[in-house]
Amino acid sequence: MIIMKTGATEEQIARVVNEIMKYGLRADVSRGAFKTVIGLIGDERKIPFSHFEVLPGVKEVLRVEIPYKLVSREYSKYSESMSKHKVIKVKNVRIGGKEPVYIAGPCAVESKEQLFRIAEAVKKAGAHILRGGIFKPRSSVHSFQGLGAVDRKMAEKALKWLREAGEKFEMPVVTETRGEVHVDLVAEYADILQIGARNMYDQDLLTMVARKKKPVLLKRHFGAGIEEFLSFAEYIAAEGNKDIILCERGIVPIGKGRTYTRYTLDLAAVPAMQKETYLPVIVDPSHGTGRRDLIFNMSCAAIAAGACGLMIEVHYDPVEALVDSQQMITPDELKDTIEACQHIYKLAQPKIKVS
Ligand code: PEP
Ligand code: MN
Image (cartoon, rainbow, N blue to C red):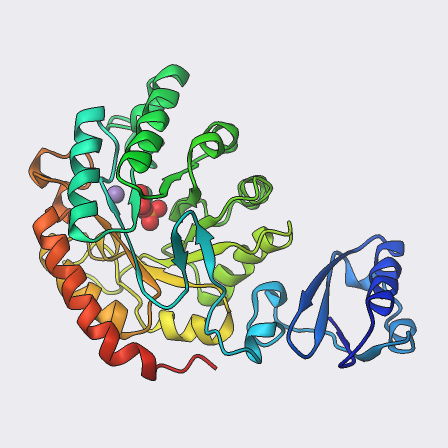
């Protein structure tokens, strides 16, 4: 990590970047209001650090211990600016901006009618972004794998419905890319590319998705620590794509016996991560609890904890849903949840400090 002096010129910055490239590494230039910080991507052992210390315009050369320096708040302009988080703009929606963002929709897209009916209802309830799984990660090969698994034609048809529903009800759309083979196709239609919890560790998938230059919604693996989660977000940032939304969606519950929740929603991770990274963090209380009767409470708690938004599974008749019916709420319940969250947001969020 190379910290440039205040007022370092563009030529001086370019020279440092050139020197870094000479050693076969890549440079990530982050320009703040007062200082420019240049991150090195690649094998740092190849670099004679003392050489960089004497280049014109260089203030300091730091060996950074944290493995997620590109997404860290400390080594970014967000440590000195007034904005709390990086604001990710997707069409008319700003994630990480002044207001929380609500993502809602079915767990899985099942038909055009189902999707459009839910899209209209969630929009009316106050949602900003439409979700809908087409390539579903499932524990059993015998269960419904999403329309994407039928064949390529069906996958594309479902992706088109998703885009059409988004256009009709004026919401950007997010859907999962479960494997490398889906990336090109999904990126053609989705505004935000989701990486599911099970794939958080798949560095090749992360890299491929990052290269699409579209915002990425990265879900935390249910066994991943915070440092690991941020380190894998770093794979996306290392491709020059810092439009990353982090999603806390619950970790494996502890103890023997009945656990009462599908996962343990780690809400302390929200403020803990937001002190470490400038990336916006959202919460998914649907997968985090696995219980529709807990979603209202946990949504309120997530917003009070400082989450930049929520992702909630919604269905007009949850028992009809082919996937995750036990954790879906109705559009009316979504409306109540968003209203309550907005009250809490106005009270709590202005007082939350991230650094
Ligand atoms: C989802 O959001 O559709 C999903 C499958 O969630 P997760 O990857 O968190 O299990
Ligand atoms: Mn689901």
